[in-house]
Image 1: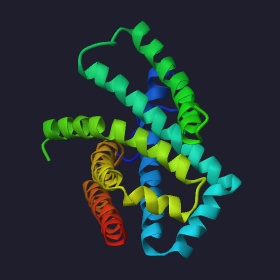
Image 2: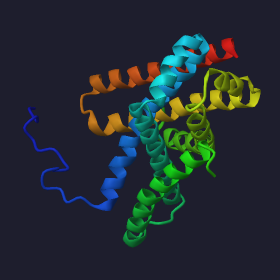
Image 3: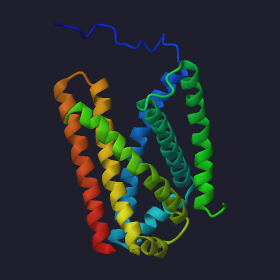
Image 4: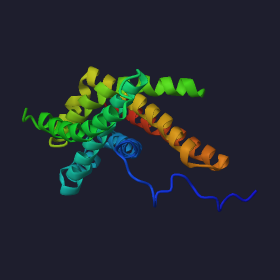
Length: 128
Length: 107
């Protein structure tokens, strides 16, 4: 049976975006980003275990503009996935299914992920 | 792995990772501004070394389960799905394994 011409769902061209679907797909995307971040952390740790020179290469990169941008992005990606994950755990326990509550917790996840990113950086840099 | 077990393991590993990743991220942000010696000092602490190893193992384990869920939803071809699952499984074992061996060897 040739089903390759069948339409795929959801029809993204006509799909009306909602908070619920936006949060859901972002949870997956940040999950993939976190995996890449985990590989980067492993490489960073390994470089320190191999030689000081190799580690210095990582240090220079992390202190550069791009390096810092990636590290801040990774902090947000982790923050988002963590908070969105907590939202999932509340669902698992049976709470927060009402549309109003789910939309509210979704917006809460987006906003608090930004705040958590800033807080983690301030603690990391000894500003708090 | 049975779907119900996958579901449970995904949540148990998430609960282990949550506090560890917050601690590690703060350390990483702090260490990224420091030098080689500050990293050596960090991993010379047996507790920090132990927690980092736990984080690496549970982190990659959590990622492996997550990826298989994503593949299940987006890859129709069973063969490609199996290859994708096998690749992530190998990556999730080899990368933390090498990192942990280097950590234990050096510190």
